Length: 271
Image 1: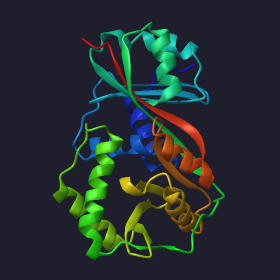
Image 2: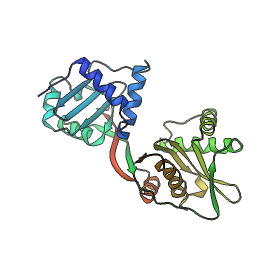
Image 3: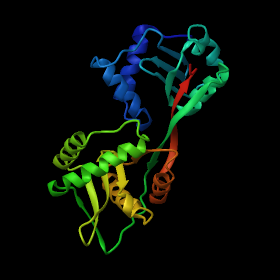
Image 4: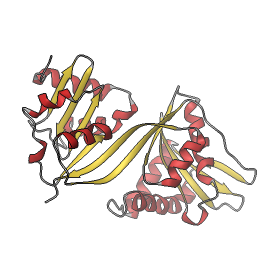
């Protein structure tokens, strides 16, 4: 039984996760990169608990990053010897939803608020949707202002006004996507932009439908096209959504994606 690992074992484990291609660790890899490049700090309260093939990782940073694999609740008793969740006031926990909720129950923390829940999806088969009066093309410079405004609206809706972006930032972001060839748009025959989708091989980035064109299945059309492009290059295709966004999740399932991992943002011990 390994109660806690050494600093070297902890660091080696993080390096393995940082080089892992498992999509469910996508957000954790970003946090590890931020720490390595000096833009964030992992505090001494971080720990790794390993029992055979089971592990629990808790990183104390700007948030508590919580991940695990094949974990069991008897590991919580070992963790409790050096980690007291009740001492964190108004702190954000992010990561594996099932593990976070089990820890909250174990520590008997009732003062918490779920700020967001994400669903991670994957698929090996795509249902293709299309229409003769629509076309999908790579985004181009002439539409940059329209696409920037759409992308700005996406961030406003996705984070409910808590992560708004400037139009200048969005113009720069769209221009980079156009340069990299990673943004596609769905147009009608009049040239109106109905939806767009970005790709981050091997996963879907953002797909968004203009407000006035929603409830017509356009999201599924652009999503199925981009997912199929990725599937031609990869064995599996991935994406993540906000669990509460019904339309996005309906489109994902309709295209053939299946959820396999849930990620939570939960604020605990609010003062």
